[in-house]
Length: 257
Image (cartoon, helix red, strand yellow):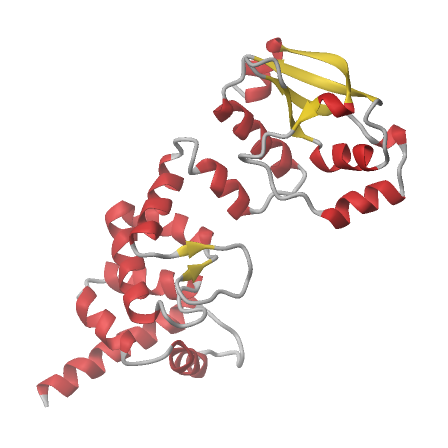
């Protein structure tokens, strides 16, 4: 049953003063001033639509959806204005967070990382596992495409690793790559993570793989993998997997010699 169906019986439409509404703060995104100013510059009362509000046990009315529109109204000095709100009563904070994620996902406005931050506080087992493993190795989840030392943005790859190998496998992959390349910018990229997973699932020794990768930089691995691509400049996990296999073979040959 969808959360709207489950909680809709506790909701009703009300007109509430803008300056009486409060911000939850604990799960909503940072207010973007450029977005607020854009709404103010093209202000149309008919475009305000409906605000989603949670009426908590303390009597306060907290905006779950509509914070930028609310800031625009207040910024225009219209705190006295009545806003049409769907008011929910009896919601736990976890319910508010879940509704916030659902509403904004439907609008394609909530990034996967923002959604993940809420999920990890909401007893989502996969999100909690990923958050715990990243924390264990001092890795920070970020939203930008460019990542610095001990940063990762490849949430999809992390979820795939957890799905295929569980918490133990996720810990092994993240720990191995963090030890080998954590200090490099972009060293925890998604294709690296997935390639390490595949090589480990083939039976590679984690310590040997970590040693083989630590002896190279990510750029060197990129160059080796790119040379294997059938289409110049393309990037594929298969080429990285083969490159890592070659490194393990080279390591074995050198030790035998």
